[in-house]
Length: 162
Image (cartoon, rainbow, N blue to C red; front, side, top):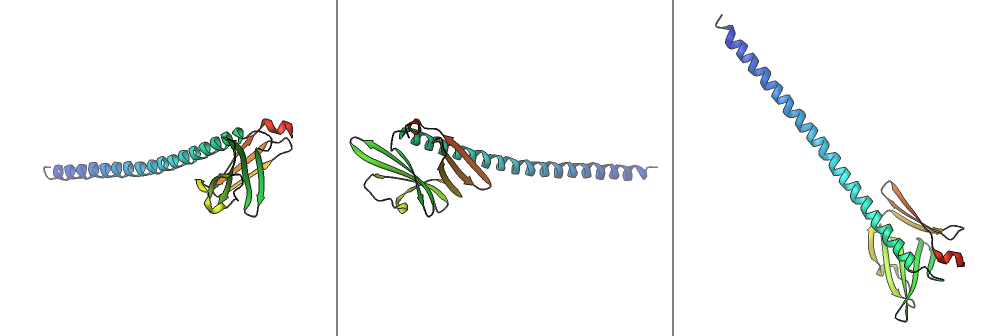
């Protein structure tokens, strides 16, 4: 009878050790899975934040140029360009917002300077950008990033005078 106790004790030890290894492996798998979810969520939050900030900046720029002749949509071969015209201390300036080489760009020039897309500064990376106007004079901005298309409608007061 004394011989069966060590075997039983060894079997109990192996069972406990196996359970511990299974528990540790399960814990590792769950941790790795949730780390991937956390990383993906962080990337999505950052992407949405970038888009939100960009739309807010574009909305502010459009509204600051909300006067007759202040906002133009120019059709170019690479897509539509938003041109914002303003006067600062008696000098006319134009800001161009456009898509080029995987990014949304901004170019600030004096109004008499030719629009050269190479001189712009990138605002945000994107896959596409488009701006159009509807029959009411509202502007529809579309930014495509990855599989997402973000849109924003912007109503302006100067549209009432058109």
